[in-house]
Length: 247
Image (cartoon, rainbow, N blue to C red):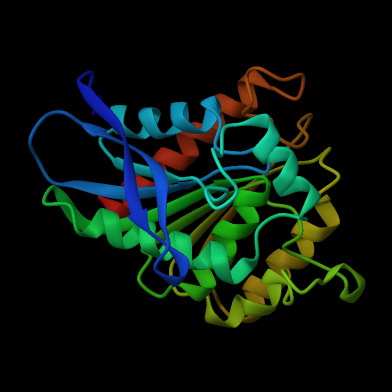
């Protein structure tokens, strides 16, 4: 069902360590009870594309919150702030998990929430979405779109990212969907295969889809990486998956 009437606002949420941050919140205007989705933005920041994704979810009957993971540095949509985040090597995993958990709590506190909440992430947000699926116990479904660095070598670990997300697979507690491109360099098809092996090892419920003739970021219509056919099919799979598990 499509909801042509939606409303969207910038809101405050309580994240890691009780910090108050900015988020973009979109939901249908019509009264009802809707499932919630946390939209985890990519490394380029809390940008226009991220807010469009939130509105897309509202159009399809979800209450979607997109927290700015860079709010402690300033406006997460600012190129200067994004540059500072890049220079810092991204945000610490524990901090991001606190911010995602706070976003989940925000959604569940809304009177029109149906109590089901999922998450979706893109690029670095895909990696963080998988971390959330394993470390935040009250998520109902999670989607990872081409999240790199789920599989990490020991040399890639840092104080901010001290554990490879794949090493949390035993703790995955919700349904999981992954969308990837065969031509991606991060994650590579070999890394996706390694990830899938770990999911099978622990008997987890998941769906993986690997798209030919697509690389990293093939949903991004404003970039050369965009692949129209693959993106349309990918979005269809996202909404079918979330409809099945969030209602």
